[in-house]
Image (cartoon, rainbow, N blue to C red; front, side, top):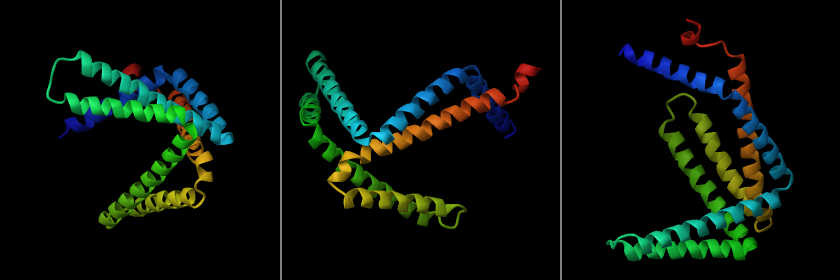
Length: 197
C-alpha cells in the first residue's frame, strides 16, 4: 500500500518534468489554438465548412486505404463486409466533398443527436450517483447539452451555418488557454525534488 503513493508521486514528477522541458511547445501550440479558435468563433460558417471538408476528406482517404487493404490483403472471411465498409466510406466522403452544404446540414443534425444522447446519459448518471458530492455538476452538464441541442434545433437549418464552427472554435479557444496556462505553470513551478537533490 505504501508503494502506491510513491508511484503516484513519481508519475506526477515525470509529468511535471515533461511539462517543464516542453513548455515552449505547449505555449506555441496554445497560442496557435487560441488564434484558430478565435478565427472560428468570428467566422463560424467558414470554420463549419472547413470541418465538413476535412471530415469528407478523411472519409475518402479512409475508404481508399480500406479498399486497397481489401484487395491487397490475403483472402479472409470478412472480405465482403470490409468491401462494403470501404465503399460506404468512399460514398460518404464523396458526398461530403461534392455537396458540402448538404454535408453541413447532415453534420449539424448529427451534432443535435449527439448533444441529446450525451445530455440524457449525463442526467441519468447524475441521478444514479446523486448521494455523492458534486452530482449537481453532472446534472447541470447534461441539462446544458440538451439546451444546446434545443437551441441548434430551434434555429435549424440556419443554425447549420454556425453551430459546428462556433462550438469547435470555443473548444479550441479553451484548449489553447489550457495549454498556455500549463506552460506558464511549468515555468513558475519549483524544480522537482529529484533534480534538486
